[in-house]
Image (tube, rainbow, N blue to C red; front, top):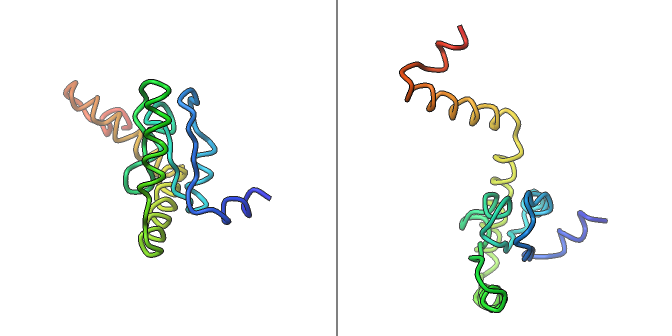
Length: 125
């Protein structure tokens, strides 16, 4: 049932600014549905301007008004929406790929170690 719901929609609105992880946002991305999210926490990290829309977290009224403005401003032609959907899928694949996650983490460790004068290869020997 969930796949058919996502596939029936062009965008996904997830206005929560208290959600720490945003698993449902990853789900929307994985179905190629560009999300509108609060620019905070997990959803703010998951979504980029290339694959969705991030709303700054501010006062409740301003937050709601900005969401409405973004929705009103989304006047994408079918080609643009398809491109964003492809980028949403690409983002989901990047974030959901365990090999890439491991590589990313190792790169961060290597950066930290290099600042200390040694590299990851020194530790892994």
